[in-house]
Structure formats: structure tokens, C-alpha cells
Amino acid sequence: MTMRLRSCLSRFLLVVPVLAGCVATADAYSEFQKFVQTRSGRAINCAMCHANSDGPDGAGFGQIGGLSPEEIGRLNQARAAFEPGQAVDSPILNKFGNHIVATIGKTRLLEFRNRPEELAAALGTTSDLDGDGIPDWREYLDGTHPLKKTDGNPWLLFVNNLSRYRFHVIMIVFATVLTIYGLANLLRGSSEVHDATQEPK
Image 1 (cartoon, rainbow, N blue to C red):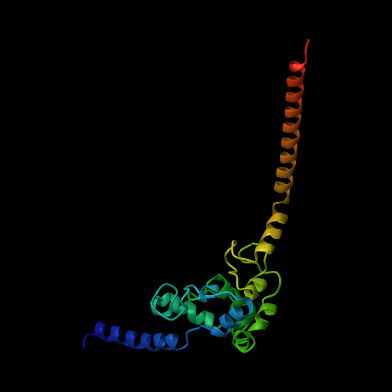
Image 2 (image 1 turned 60 degrees about the horizontal axis):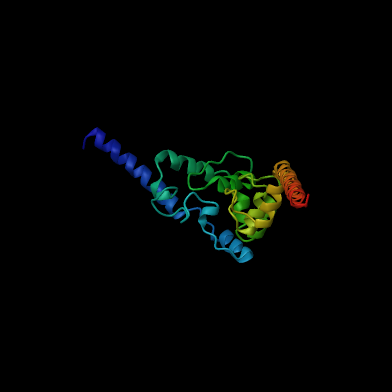
């Protein structure tokens, strides 16, 4: 056996257990999904936290079977983020999933599998990844997507947008009132001219 063939074979034998270990411990925690579905009454898929809406199992984009060696390294680094405050960039998670692990750490995340309702409070009140004015903890409980500006509680989105664009709304209302006032005066003036031309001389 040539030296090059031996080298390739040894690399293969090193990678296979890593891949097998990754597949065996895919980070899909259905307890959170079930809790959100039950609480919100909305159909929730894995895309709330994962890169792929079908979850981490498989060979597609954002799934373990399709990861490159560099992505597997990032995955293992994210899996080792047991304490909060560490940089997390898992290729099987989306921005919200990575934010959860970075905020509370992998240890607490695993603990919350038995108490998924406590995740909302642990996320804190300041995070709003999509900038729609609805905090991430609320979107988690409501079953709306924390990375989509247009997906949220309709009333909260309306109130937040009204507050955000209040100057524009005030200007539109002001312009509308002026337009109606101007049209009313124009019609009144037109009517007076018409009446004046109809009077007998």
C-alpha cells in the first residue's frame, strides 16, 4: 500500500467516527417546538431555530450530512459552548438558534428541554433580531418567526409601525385634512359663482 493511499485511508477512518457521532447527536430538540405549537396554536417547523426547515438530520443545506469539514468544526465548537457568552456560529442553526445558545449556553438549553416555557424569560427582554419591535422572547411564545419582520402578532406590528412612522402618519393626516379643506372651499366657491351667474339681471 502506497504512502498516499495510507494517508487517505487514515483520514477517512478519523472522519467517519466524527460524522457518525454528529449524526447520532443531532441537535433537534422537539420539546421546544411542541411547547410553542401547543401554546400558540400555530404550526411551527424547525426553521424557527434551524438553518433547514426539516431540522438538522439529512444531507441538505444546513443539515449534518451535507456539512463540509470546516462546518463540522464550527458545529463541534458550538456544541462545546456550555456556558453563556461564547461565540456561537453553528451551521445547522439560524441566527436565532445561535443567539439562544450564545445567550444561555448549551447546559441551560439542555435543562430547558424539560421546562421549555422558561426559555422565554432566559432570553431577556432586549433582543429583537429582526427589528420589528417585538422582542424575541415574545415571538418564541407567540410562535412567530424571530427573523422575519412581517411575521409577528398583527396588533403589535401595527402599534410598533405606527409608533416608528408616527411623523409620516401625522404628515399624511395633515396633508389629507388640508386637501379636503381645499376641495371643500373650491366646491363652495364654484357653487357661489354658479349661483351668481344664475341670478336674473
